[in-house]
Image (tube, rainbow, N blue to C red; front, side, top):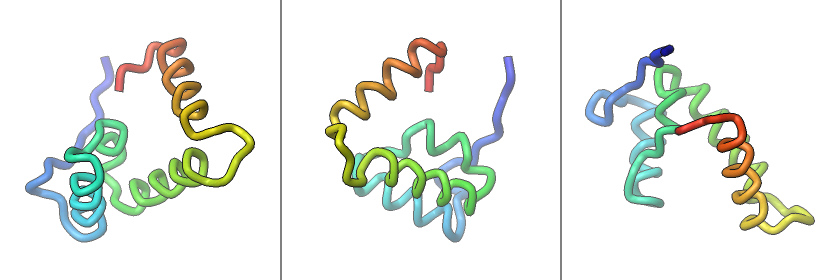
Length: 81
């Protein structure tokens, strides 16, 4: 099984620290999908921007449907994050 290095909360600095603090403020935790890119703060920021544009932007699909589709596709692909 592959292993991806992740930055612990207490070692996050700069932009990554801000992302972690914002995540905890919004949801009470840093989700694993965010942690997977934590080794590279700018990549984490880009990933979060992409996520917001896909899930929160105006769309003909309601956000609830987009989130449901993401879960179904993740399960179909055996993603456990």
